[in-house]
Length: 260
Image (cartoon, rainbow, N blue to C red; front, side):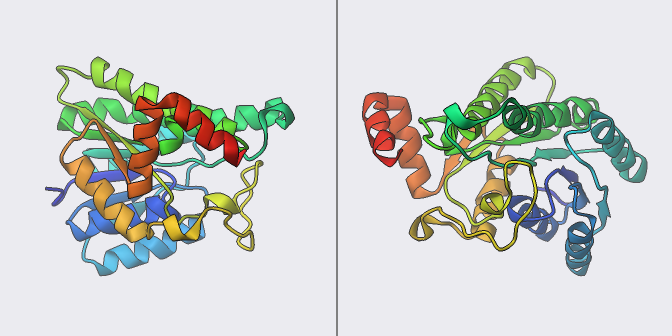
């Protein structure tokens, strides 16, 4: 399915981006990886090359529009095409809404929403040429209230809406949009503070018993992109949460209110 296809992934230095890169590489894809941490990208690139495929690293901050535009041009100059773009870069602001500053809100939305939308914008002309795929990384947080992480939930609700809109706007172009909504997956998200600074020593407060291994999550995500699914919710608890949010919103509010 992805043999010799060019796949560009943002936020590829760790977590889901990193393991999706490995999974695409195992399927024969050519990788282009972007993130802020160049040293991490170089280590991942070395592993990908051991799998027998090419890998280009393009350090890039999705907060900087010119860097996103330039990254796309580097990929196209090197490989001549883009077949899959995965808008994976993101993080979570922690705190009750009454306590969050304008700066925290702006950063949350700029990374998770604006950066994601611009990733699509600059990749789109080349995805149209290749009849390719755009994948947006959402969250089951898009479906339910999120006490203590309301900014993150709002950003992922926006991602869900962007995906639904793109699925209409892309009709007739040959480009498909898959929105992926994971539940709890092992990642560095809890180790990044509200300023976007990584703290490797930070504990992860999410329930360990519900956590999916990142490599397992990457496999189902790449499979969903291959099948051009419109929306894919995964992990057992994630499906339950999304179902409750959609069909029993009053009960969902009660459940999550107890957590707040």
